[in-house]
Length: 257
Length: 141
Image 1 (tube, rainbow over the protein chains, first blue to last red):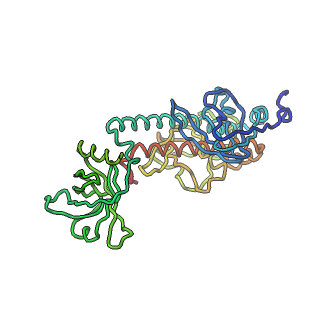
Image 2 (cartoon, chains in turn orange, cyan):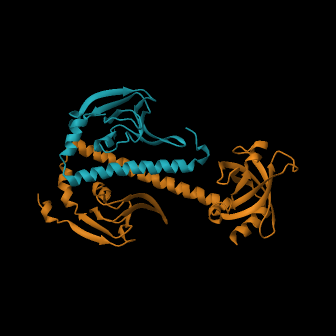
């Protein structure tokens, strides 16, 4: 057999800078790369989206799927250098002969592995696409949903609140420590919790005045209750159940400012 | 299924399972490698939203091969359950397979290792997406 002598294909070294694309999904190529130095991010591309598969370190190899999947020698994923990266490039001929001559049962097992990996890779892309669709749909329903976390603001606001089931006469007090479009973090006295039920998912109506003078009434439920660093105080995490259009506007404006 | 001659010498036993029987349990120790001779098996993973079916394997499929690496100290990475019984499995001689593997060059071994790790990672990613898609059920199981 000619052309398969290992020495005819010396190992080549390549260096990439941070951010360089090493392999592009869909391109032709069957070389295998071994990381000598640096880190490599492997991802699938679906539309504009990058779906993370793994991050590889020195000693790891990549590019092996196109080598094994001879029916379709295009790259099944992309790889990008996360930092300055040195690679050892293996010419496919260095392995082809040995691969072909591998004990047939072992080769069968490897083929099975490959088939399953390719199938799971497709499942992964499908699931990621579905996830994106769902996220987009959620965003359309409520433009605040996907951005709310960016707007969380630390505050110190006096707040009156009452169990939603009780009449407005019942009045407990607390201090809102942070607020976002999705909820508040509030510090309350321990005794509040001994006078009225403060259990997870209990509903409350909150009344406060924002620093800009705007009144706010909110309906929220408890999602967490923890000891505060201040003695005799509890920290209560609450999620808004419903925000009126007006409350959303007032709060949104305050959080953006 | 017709057993190819090369597979014949690796077959050390045959086992039969009824639908729902657990063949491999996630997290358990063991290095049996199986080939599906008849029927179908389900590959499942435990997640925080319950048990998720990752894949269904048919006649001819090999599973349990990740044990070949002998690297995963945390036990089997997924459960395998008989899906469409009676399921007939061939038990492959692990020692023989392992000897084949050990006879390979370091490069080819690295290649097989990479493939196994990749499949394990890919399964974990898929499981993570399933969890993300089912936030309502979080906390169950």
